[in-house]
Length: 272
Image (cartoon, rainbow, N blue to C red):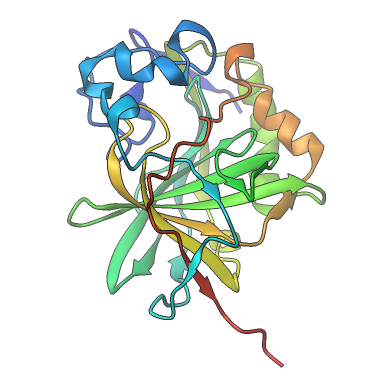
């Protein structure tokens, strides 16, 4: 299956999530990176719209400390209803993502439904657990009708292959043939893609208020981080990195200060 390459002026912030991760107009062009003069420590100075990347007090990712997290009996078990939707695999130039043509399901938080719009991978993980960085992180981005955002983070360590990634893995080889710089993206249609495999049960999860982890680093995002890491094979991690230019193969923003933000823990007792 052929991939389709699209060129824009510089990094396509508007393509990260057309309706979510971007507050830039389609014709605005600001490049960011993960190393060098446009790396994470310089994001706030690249453009006035990115100022919160440096000045914000509720930035993501953060380190999740199991011992410091606050058990919260008011938090409910995650309620998710994921299903099939038209999708495309996208090399944004700075990450690999799956964009859905319409909502691929919903997650309910505090009685409000958030629609699943897209998901993308970071290698290594952006969030750390008790100071340890894992091998990868999958972020599922949801948006409610009122515009509020929620992102679910699943951390991965090298081990058995991940079944969901396995469904799109062959298309990563096609993306790898069409290298994208930071001013381009390419995509491969996936047809109808089921997301039910992402609805895995989790006995505990952490919840805090943070931000997008790429510019413009918009805050007031509800983050949910699964407490138990999943696994993917080293071959799958290599496949995720293969389409990326060298400077973007390691595309994790460093952890940010928590500035006293509470991290709440939902921990269901084990069934006897």
